[in-house]
Image (cartoon, rainbow, N blue to C red):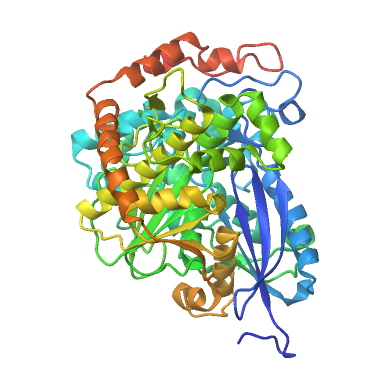
Length: 587
């Protein structure tokens, strides 16, 4: 039992930075009980079309396609707003809080000065798109990722198999190379290329420490090394010193303290100066301890706008199409595996916003339910295969196992009789088929999967959970906490504060018990097995080079849109922005 000197309980705070908001949770150290929470929605959300005028000015630059940016001060405001709100909601004395930890979406990158100031906050850079945060779902660096992959394969780089043979456009090197080639002036002004997971810790404790999780999974850090200068120079001579000049820094072990809360951050949060600040981490990976899933063969899927799959393994295996395998990437002493799907909840949200007629929304409102609940109820009445549809879940590209963000969504079988609930169910099933593809890849590579545990906002959809159990053939449990990542961060805060000797011990004491259990239904498993075979045929036809129509469509789309330079417009002085066109970069 963890208590303070006077016999009272002590507490920790976990802060989960998501795609659209940040959430803080107050957790009791001795048993993991969640006592209060606070949420702050980012005022600027995700910037995809034009830089926000209140930050960039009235002549804010427009963005080309596939861009996804954020404003870093929104992250600070989570500390100013959500943390005090959580403390008030919990009704505790802030002085009883002994540690704080954060988790973040990844790979989300911030270009900063040597003092940690985001480049967009520096004079002359507010209207430069490359000066802002590049969110995880920024996919405009796909051409750079393609070159990295081709060169690494040609040279036989020994780190490439650790990432399933392909590097994602979402990751540190591809996004950094895009910055260099499209805005070399911003690249030169940047002192550090920092994961947002590490930047927010820097803001809290004043120390810049790279966390081992993102360094390994997103930063191509394997066996104590990054890609060589020779490799980087072959990509672009000006990229030769990217690691040494922009990226390389002290790497902190997960669960360790990166430092202690500064006076400024204490004023933001209402917490005591000097409490422990844990090394940063990723939202998916911190959730494994929250679900008490820290042993091999327990696959955790954090299902929200996207899905990240994480799992520990006792041995190193190279799994095709994975996001990475990292020694100690989740807990010390085990190999942490990561896979993922770029679009899941985002796909469902896109469909309800764009593919559902007004009368369905009206009917949902009349019943006092949301459109997702309404469509789920209609879809649940169907027999498997009744809608006659099959979909590919690639509306935001494919993260695993194809690692190709040029791919796009498909629905096959639509007729004049197809209804919105038919397509909705087909999309639910498509995401389950995508997860089954990942599970099969693990198993085929000698990484057994015996349990399937779900966290995240989508676990409340019981139809979806049963579909996943039936499609994967695995018993499925959901995490009892509605705040899995924040609870996981709080567990890391307790370890950083010295309350537990390690993540496994803290997870055993503070982790959440299951909230629901779904057992595969044999007749459903058989029915979905037939549909899954058709999914794999479609998957391989469009995704493995048999038909490259999706890539050709992307090329046509890019040709129809303005170049980066044209989209960026002119600078405040009316002169052309100092950003080369794509043609100039190629030359």
